[in-house]
Length: 123
Image (cartoon, rainbow, N blue to C red; front, top):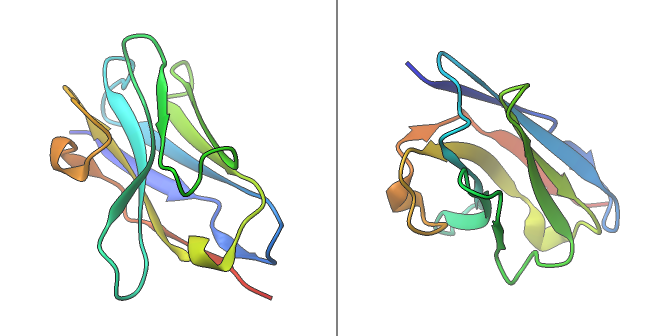
């Protein structure tokens, strides 16, 4: 059974940086698409960034484009999200997820989810 565990969340001042990690266990994720999603209080869950298994191509939401970088290391069974120039609007619980056959960076295509890690971009 695939298990995902996020880490690296915390409190950071606006303009600061943070890197999230998500380690998978139970099975290798080299053939899975991987993604990061977030949910802020009072808002629906949204896709932040996704990375494909086929060629490593990435998708970034418009709100984070140019600031967040997703990467994966299949040897370590890990996906990362480097977050730069954090804004208060980035405050949310961030989840990593895996999809055996993703079609887009949409939560509906992702079956396996981590427990989430809190990111707060506030002074």
